[in-house]
Amino acid sequence: MAILSTSGLARTFTTKQGPVEAVRGIDLRVQPGEIVGLLGPNGAGKTTTLQMLTTLLPPTGGAATVAGRDLVADPAGVRERIGYVAQSGGVDPQVSVREELVTQGRLYRLAKAPAAARAAELAAELGVEDLLDRPCAALSGGQRRRLDLALGLVHRPELLFLDEPTTGLDPGSRADLWDLVRRLRDRHGTTVVLTTHYLDEADALADRIVVVDHGVVVADGTPRELKQRHAGSPGASLQDAFLALTGRRPAPAQDPAPLSV
Amino acid sequence: MHVLAADTALVFGRYARQTLRSRFQMLFGILMPLLYLVFFGPLLRDLPLAADASSWQVLVPGLLMMLGLFSASFAGFGIIVEKNLGVLDRMRATPVSRLALLLGRVLRDALLLLFQAVLLVVAAVAMGLRAPLPGVLIGLVFVALLSTAMASLSYAFALRVRTPQEFGPVVNAVTLPSMLLSGLMLPMALAPGWLDALSRAVPYRYVVDAVRAAFTGEYAGTEMLWGALVAAAFAAGAVTLGTRVFRGAGA
Image (cartoon, rainbow over all chains, first blue to last red; front, side, top):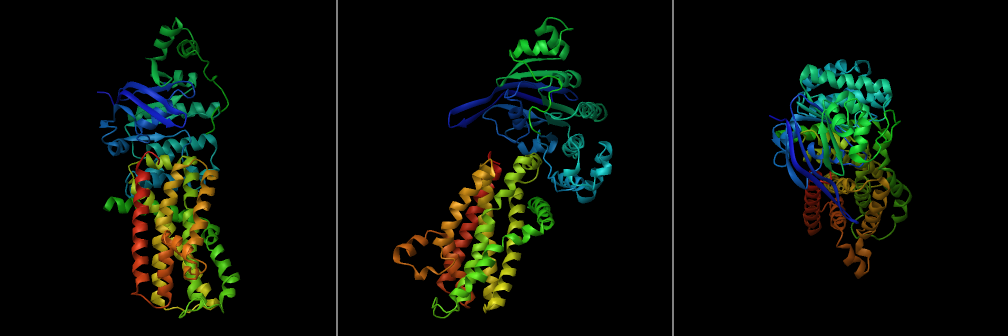
């Protein structure tokens, strides 16, 4: 039984220049415990898709079941079961790490004491326990990202959405974050759906890659399958496969922050 | 209902702490009415503004409304910043009540403005205001109601714009005419017919007249009735609109 399934999920924005089809129809199935990478060039519709799946943006077409709940009919039920870490994170720089973690727990309706306990537990698990009483502004980029991840995990969601989780991080912090995501799946069985435009990230982290371009899924498979199918051999690079699929050059592996975080 | 109250308290707590961290923010809103009180108030002292009221009983209700109008209408600035930081989306992705995301913030704003209103009244008493206590308390209730309404509208509008640069000019274009047209500085009773008629389209006109009546001890006249009706309807309408925007796609 899939933990996430969509059919024809679409979002059209109305602008002064006329309608813009940001997402034209996404068909996606994710099994429990999978790490799935949505890969695509900037503007492909990855973030819009994630915003729909996390109830932040109502779809204008199609249907989806997220963590066993109907996305359109029961968005509140979806929210209780999923975690979401946006590209911009979402912490107040003036607020302390502890306060953000506890508030997040309370927003997920934990009582005061369990929220405080969970904040301490998560801080230890993600290596920010020494920073609990510092303002979020004092954290480094990598520490900030780990805090963002912790905020998405306070209620132990079965399904976690990460929007470009390592954009702007240095290589060491990226590798750390990949380890954290893998550990999350291995220890807790958490299903992870992440967007990225880094090929090495998709290759290293995802069990399965879904390539999105112009608002539709253009390829779906393991990194090995994609290389075989679209670049001619399993030994080919994912870059060759990506280029064959989208006709565009993706971001290089160590592109220094093409998007602001 | 219990969930809504708990969520509202949680959101209120977050923003109340934010306000308490910034002493400057706590006092900034009171600056403009205070300047009018000290540098404009004395000019009115010997003018025949009302038959049975001192000039302070006419001016101070207007300054209280000014506080509620200007400070509350800029409340939305904060949410634009939070939207750009991603804080708003982070909260919207949780099960927290959408209404609480609005009410918690508005409650903070209303309490902050009440606190500032009390300071303003104390300063006014030092300047020479004499008014019955029940009348002053009624005035404070009106300040809270109008702050709630204005702040709700401000948040609703702020959710629709991307940058503070789009937000500021629109708010200014609404607040300044509202202040002049509702007779906050001088009562509209002094106005020529056309201006008086125009001012009746601005909700603040009715409320400031009601508070002026309260400050002279008239609690049961038609001014009070109209003021209460208009303030209640304005607040209910504004909160309803704010909630709809927070629930919908714009939030």
